[in-house]
Length: 75
Image (cartoon, rainbow, N blue to C red; front, side):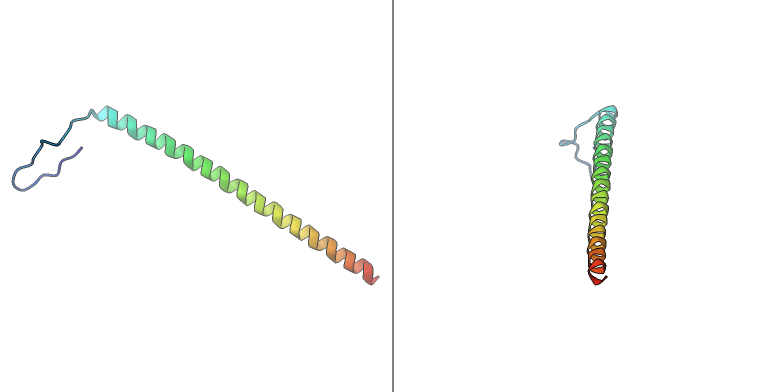
């Protein structure tokens, strides 16, 4: 932890010392979990996009069927 330097005297009574390796390991774990979460979110986004595409295609085909039925009635 960095203690801000005061113009008078810096008070170190509440400060603790932690090895830099411990902090770096924790940071790596946070980065790993973040990357995992981002990959999952991208996967969810891709799935939702695909689902919207399928719904659109179904709606389009339903309307084409309706159009063909109406044309058949006219003939």
